Picture 1 (cartoon, rainbow, N blue to C red):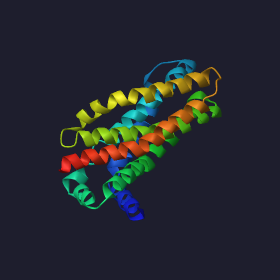
Picture 2: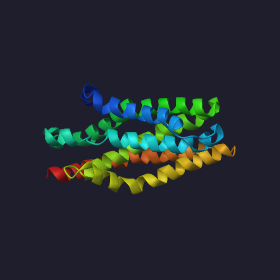
Picture 3: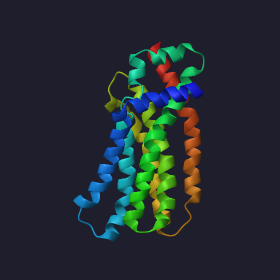
Picture 4: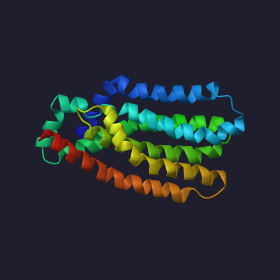
Length: 216
């Protein structure tokens, strides 16, 4: 497991464009949006979180465009398929590494922009945990879409994944709505965390099954 973690980290770090590019896209959206839309500060606060979630979603979608393609093309997936239970472990770790190098940085950046836009440090408690959890969910779901559309084009994978993302986006909207009305949001964050814990186990298992089908 440690060797897999080291290998997958090295592979992604070596492809600077694969992880730095999406982060720069996220940064560009966050900087350019307030500059290109003429809104009062109060109106900007009301729609900021919607832009934040959609920017996070777009960033993850771009970053996972070819998460399995190179491994499929060079025979790495086939190698792990031959080794018992290694394919599931590899998928689990690969998704985690993508979250570590892309999900966490955009969560930190998103939280920074959230605090600077609202002018209140309390927005940290809304943006940071919700972005950490939702980005991990997004990465898992787009990885699933990518595995289903392997060799068929990334657009198909995104179309397959989109219906699964709507409940998460609705839940994120509920978190912001509750926070605006002064209601407790911890129960919604725990619900999202519970969804993530289920996804972490189920999605890599489904992906490994899909990839095995491609290989056979």
